[in-house]
Image (cartoon, rainbow, N blue to C red; front, side):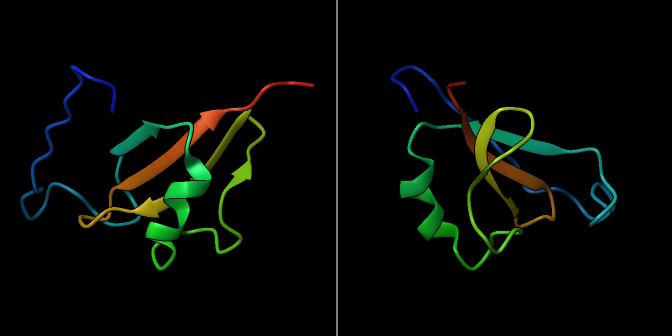
Length: 79
């Protein structure tokens, strides 16, 4: 995170999140996607790892500890 930014998270209480059917997600925009992916290798939902999505973001996704979707990515330049 850049200087001056903070992210505060709280553990969800039982009943807040229905795994596989919840509206909650977290998106982390980081330019170092390839450097971060190995740290989450066992949790990445798409086993091929980071990829360029149709919406123009190079990213990967993991399930957070509460079953909340977490995506880590960065916009790609159009050539």
